[in-house]
Amino acid sequence: MELAYYSDYAVRLVNTEEPARNKDALTSVEAVRDLFGANQQAARRTTDADVTRFRSVRARLRAVFEAADGGDETLAVDLLNSLLLEFPVSPQISGHDVRDEDGRPDWHMHLADHPSNATAGYAAIAAMGLAFHLTSHGVDRLGLCEAAPCRNAYLDTSTNRSRRYCSDRCATRANVAAYRARKRVEADRTGLSAEAAQPSTSVTDRWPLEPLAGGR
Image 1: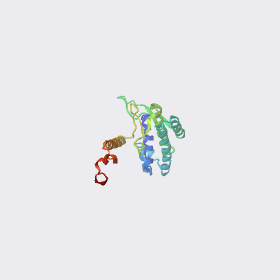
Image 2 (image 1 turned 180 degrees about the vertical axis):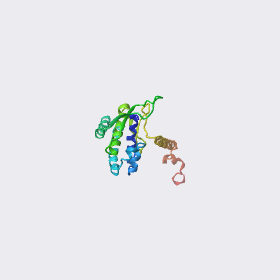
Image 3 (image 1 turned 45 degrees about the vertical axis):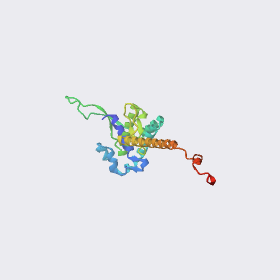
Image 4 (image 1 turned 90 degrees about the vertical axis):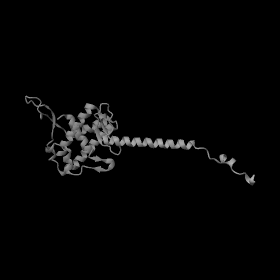
């Protein structure tokens, strides 16, 4: 398993909450276990206490994305370093897959699960994965969706650093909203132009057509 894979752990955890919509999907042990994906051995260690602990880690990871999205590289790195210090990883060499006909394993670095509790294990993996992504691709590759009120976290892997939304759905929604806004502006401008083109109906314009006093 490549280290880059672990950065998705951070994104998955951060996106269990939608602050602008006041929604939180992290409300049960089952919801926490779902975050581990195929890593069922680690998921089985989850207890009720981990729900609150996961929320705390989530807030700290979101702060990293917010700092990066706001252009404060130093703060983003400092916040991530604090997580790395609190939740250290246990790297080890692993070889799950067979590489050739001789049966030689495809050796690669793997982050071992932390034995103490589910939160510590997940936080260590998420922080290390995010750190790897940040140092390999840059702080500006950590972003928050611009399609308000979404604000989901994402990792920009585009070739030209152009990603602005967490998903195609949000990108489409934002483009439609922008198109409608442009159309409203155009309609307002057209209405003003039409109004300005109307003939004047002032009193002085009407005066020659009105009968004079006394019937003359």
